Image (cartoon, rainbow, N blue to C red; front, side):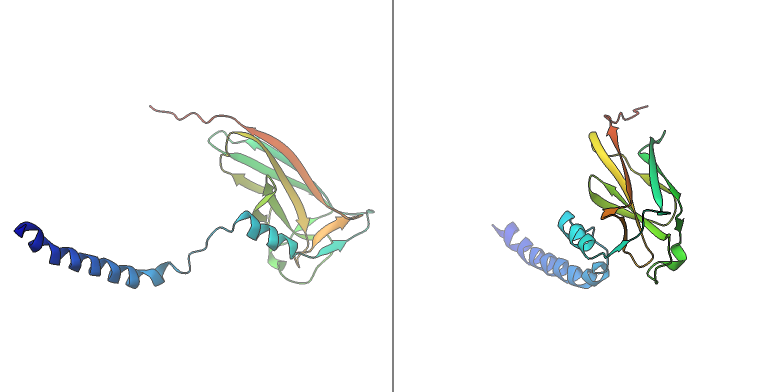
Amino acid sequence: MSKISLRLPYLIYLSIASILIGVLLAPLFRDIPVQGTVVDMMEHEMQHRTLEISAVGAPQVAIAVEKDPMDGWNVSVMTDNFSFTPDLVSSENVDHTGHAHLYVDGVKIARLYGPYFHIPDLPVGDHEISVNLSSNDHSYYLVEGDKIAARTTVTQDVIEIDRE
């Protein structure tokens, strides 16, 4: 019984010290970005405006997704009549310029300022990869009410771990 009573004050001091350290360190972690939930990202997508353009001379987009020899997937975005303009992002629209949005299974994973992107390995199974074009002011380019977009499906096989 005496051994427990001698340790009790130390446990109390240790508990108080742990709480104080947590209080002191907490402000250091408040600005760490947190990946939004699917609902948050979908709400963000709803905030984007649209920019209807004529089908004649409209930008076009295509994508190729190749398995990377090391891990993941390499995405190549090919465009016609469109230029990536990262230096003009969030400014007024200039016809046929802007950026793209990359989606995996309908969830936006990146804003693209150029034609190449690497996606890490995905869960086993089929996955839809899609890209759509946006103007500098973040409006989605539309032709006859449809986003200018490209999509393909990839199949992630079981990932074997090299145990040498």
